[in-house]
Length: 227
Image (tube, rainbow, N blue to C red):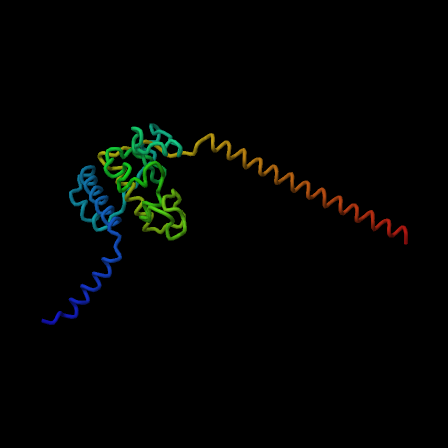
């Protein structure tokens, strides 16, 4: 029996589309959204939360930093790097500068887990692009905290992950990622020294130009007198 053209076409197109799917990212987003829909149902008594969330037509919940700013810890990048689950340390990750303890999800976030690449750092960019190694389409480090050059859809993906960590019943908000004050002072001193050296070099060059101009003027005066 001949296969209808429409059926053959549908199967062919479906096969092409499926061949381009990154199944790791697909299932990561699936279980993320499943968890988000459960959290919305739990927190907001919204029993229909699953439908828009799973279809990807919902708006991520906006996180208000001022709610817990007073009691939150300030964590430097160096401190965050140490929270990688080794030697009994907890598992921390940061997204958009907010640090979360995901130790309860050790199966996924400990060494060898699917999400371990995100632990001990702020890899906000990766949450948006799905890239977790090397560089992304813009040429930037996949695990960077920079949001430069991301699309609106990628920014929305980051907010969806942020909502997951914020509303998850087993993950906890720890504090805010901050620059190391000592490193900031050293960097500022270094910049000031560079500025001072540049100013000194400019002043020296200007003085040399003045000396040359004076020598040329004296030489011209001497030539006029001799004439």
